[in-house]
Length: 63
Image (cartoon, rainbow, N blue to C red; front, top):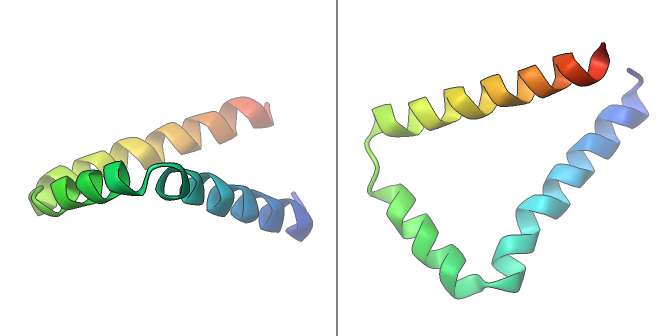
């Protein structure tokens, strides 16, 4: 993987992350306020699942 691919992937993440608040700011704000009510353990569990899913996708796409 070269650096251009990494920068393209980061740019795609930013585009995807920006779509939901752009399309539906009210729902995004509601979802964000619900996230703030989660405990640290719940947030860490969600983060670990996200990281694991991302690594699995990278592994599957790389082979």
